[in-house]
Image 1 (cartoon, rainbow, N blue to C red):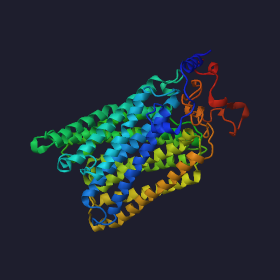
Image 2 (cartoon, rainbow, N blue to C red):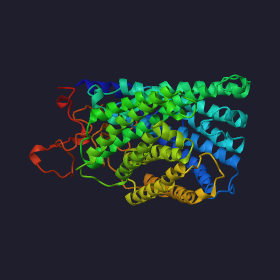
Image 3 (tube, one colour):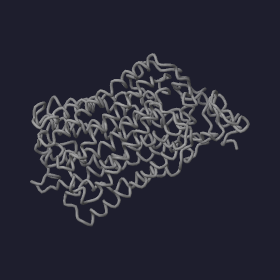
Image 4 (cartoon, rainbow, N blue to C red):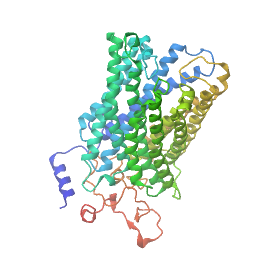
Length: 569
């Protein structure tokens, strides 16, 4: 008996577990990583809808120059809550949901390293999110989602206190999740899987988790000090008492710019899984893409002050942050070229997952180009606090993150549910999302260049025509969620059975049943080929091949006998 078989036999004989989950499990404190992953995804999408309602209300107000839908105070409330919800309750938890579901499956583990801590990290999110969203009915914060002092000192203390409390809870949840991801990836891989054998999604989560552990405590410190200023009358950041609001900005942005990469890196990893499968080609430049995630994580920690070029930053320090902000485009560009080379010449299947993946690349590149523009000090000073920044932010985050989340959901939905999603509804969803996104945010570049400031509800009438286009785009985006919700709900209940490996993927999650059993694998898998070895001789039942003699048929389930595996050689 091989080592893997003995380990599996010992595990199975020590205790017994049920083979499937009941629907009640998804509403309970459950330590199964797959249940927690789905809990994260469903909860985060619920808050995405709430944040989307707030955004639609804001765009409705901005369709006209006058304050005729919501008053300026309510507009500021909606703005603060929209930004906070979309970042801390939608994109970051959605990435954690994908990681929770996929990482143990991808590395051949039976669960996360700390299952109960994993469940605790999730259950901190719903109450914090509901309290934050509910603050709109009480005394919502209105100083902008960055809550700059001294602006926060003149807005409602109750609302600011709720905002601070919610972010501290959500940040703690994020830290607990990052610890779990790091330990799981580094310590629980099957013996035959080295670091350079891991799926690229795991590399992305390693890098994002490191950023979380370094950056989030700094944000927590800033929020705690701000809470003392608000509630106890101290003057850490209050200039009237000798404090310095610029210090708050440094602490806030030390986390909040790396937060961009905390949000985007998991989706970069998901894209690196989607493209090779649906192009039937090996990933181009595996190590370059893997190590570029680490480079993004490192460089991302030393670019935060480009948000503060107008805050009295010394000229020499401006130059430092400008240079490194431009340098960070290099590892990102490595990924872009690697992805394009992967799909070049491939047998591309233009299904929903692939369309959202390709759409993600196209819109993220636009956001990246505008990012290099605002990295230049003179240009940034010109467009600072204008709608050009809003456009850049949304092309990077909405374009990069939301398109990536949708692509990942379409790709792994069959694994999670055992059902296929409807492709016609999926394509309709993509078309509406892509049109709505570009119609909403592309005109904002021009709005910023001609001088329209952000965070305002009443503006010069000369800006109205472009704002009308943005509002039409926003309603298109709102409508685009309808076919997805119908598709996901109906497919989960009555979709076409997917089989265990509908995409003929090579990573471990596709080598078990759909949905996977509670323990993930009957026997721990053994790595015998790379996660992206498409076209290298491995074929699946029903797959067309050109040369029968040079193609090796994958055994049932995708596992090689241990004696023939890398571990046994």
